[in-house]
Image (cartoon, rainbow, N blue to C red; front, side, top):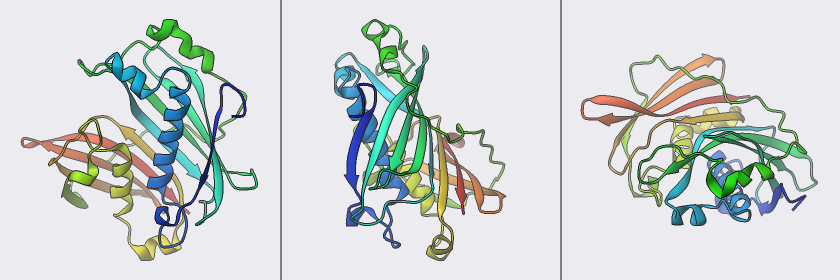
Length: 250
């Protein structure tokens, strides 16, 4: 631990966590970030297990990851995470990813809300533990990447249609937030990915989807090698937007 407000986790790029290039996948990195956030929160009294006892839980609202390079197979790397700011209904959490020599190779920004598990409505963060969550905010580390931007998709024809299955569903009974990243990455061919490195990945979560839902992915290229996407689920004969994404290749 760098200090009481920053959690540092040492990891290794396992061979079963890398893609055809030997580098860590964005989905696995996303999982590592969320796990590190969970450890940081739990060690300070705001973890999922403790919150669940009071019928509250954390919900990821926005996530932006920007990398200059991905850890290579068997390479050690570290993730630092800290809370940048807390507001009544949401909190900003940042991450720094460093290579084995300690040099930053990426950063991430995330926005989280706490919801009441019964009503599914946001809870007041200043009411939990007497508002002590603000004691864990710090500006000792910088997160130099841009905050998530606005995402707008106008395409009317989906590029992919599928039904959510067992491997998509998490303990809360809905599609895991990281599985959306993996479904989006599957849209791109191996040839494209051999010639384009993923630089930045943004996700904005707006609605839950469940086992057996028909999910449709809409995609449009906004600039060269930059894409905006939406994943929508069918509710009767209507579509509901579950996730919006913006990705940049280099």
